[in-house]
Image (cartoon, rainbow, N blue to C red; front, side, top):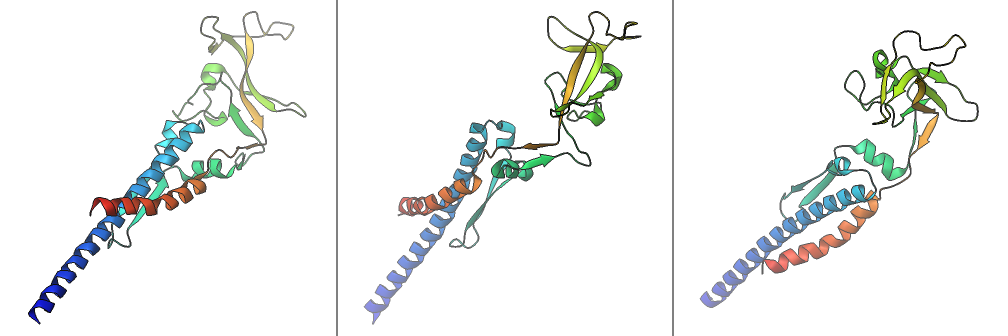
Length: 217
């Protein structure tokens, strides 16, 4: 009886140790799967040409829980942007029939320090925006009477005083510059495959748990 009790006690201890190792292997494998998925999604964003800033919005968090029910959560801090490029959505202007797209000649920031749009355009510097309707083509918002530097190509301030000649033409050296292209909508091309990356990560997770289990033997 003593020998049987000793053997059973040894088996029980071995089983408990195996269970602890299995719990830790599941935790490690699940955590590695989450981190791997985060890196895959970050690389996907960069390869799609969407920049490092959006790529770094992907985050992961590991939840050990009770071991066998461990979990990892991967999410983006810019979900609306990621979703737009993952689905390929149509973007329309808010409360307007037009969506204003800045041209390279437009300043990057508006008078409030935020991304440029017609509402925060620095008219005190460049003059008032003028709407140019073009039937069958994209309409424009332009500024008149500005000068463009021959060295830098940058748009300068609007000239002071009268910018037109008596015949109604802009004076010499002054020009009209397009600041915004106005379109009714823009369709974003699908450039991300978030679900596919998640599916591949889930398929690899079993192998990652196996590797973690082997490393604990």
